[in-house]
Image (cartoon, rainbow, N blue to C red; front, side, top):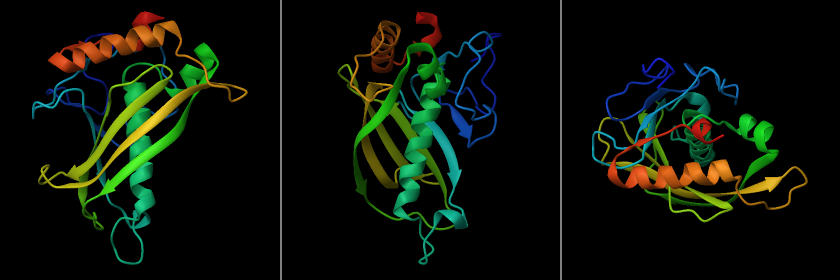
Length: 200
């Protein structure tokens, strides 16, 4: 939520955050810390703790010759939900670099393909931060049918490591470590996660 307590642009605050692709938050990779103080509900309407949800339509550019989503499309969707998660909690990739001179580097991604999404399908891209150990941040992701969320297309576990500008591993900055602890505790009991900016 914003500084006035209302929902973030492009989202509905009914227990789950539902984005509309690149609209609403501008997608510049940065957040105006003076203007944005998001408070994020950590339990969706289905009772799943910690998930952010982004609605996508499978477009022609997302498919291969068969009319089904190309496997690389899912990787792009997962990157989008990871970026959205950090931005929603108040510190995008660009802000992280500016504030701490550190990057998040993707070091591993394990994917399970269960069924293909086809051209025109409406899907929900879900993401949350899982059990993590500094300096590794684990992201759990899933793509399901909007019409029937019990139908899962793909799931993935992604590992990110904080690195310096000369590509050396580095531990999380203390403010980020404090925020992750708060996130981890809130996501277990459906609490509200404070913005990362609250710890800066």
